Length: 184
Image (cartoon, rainbow, N blue to C red):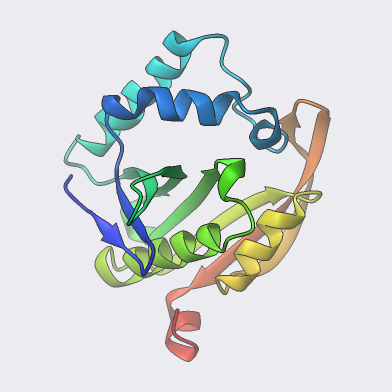
């Protein structure tokens, strides 16, 4: 897979094993772990196994999973990760997730990269629906999802196994038809 996406300020490209140290650092930050079900890896080898799986899925040729790194265009600084996992082809549906380094919070990068991923999903992958979820206490992520045009559709009770215990999850989605009404 050679999909490289761009925004005004960001480069969004498939991860590789060369990104191991930056991804390990991202996964090891307590502030980015707060609402993440992955947990902080015990060591870099654990992160390596996770990344290896993502890279293999990126390169499988089946185009079912896309895991990208987000970088600033000018500085090439590693901002974080964003991914899209496709469901069964008949349903034309996918789920997105993202995780940004706390040094890049509150700069609009999450909304900018998510908006670009939604455009990729609808225009290039011809999806019908894209979904996302977030812990109900994750105010930052809620803002990102809503700014990108996603609609809160529901709440699942005690479904996320977070470090602090089970959390409720807000379920968000956007349809291709929604985008046609108001462009991304």
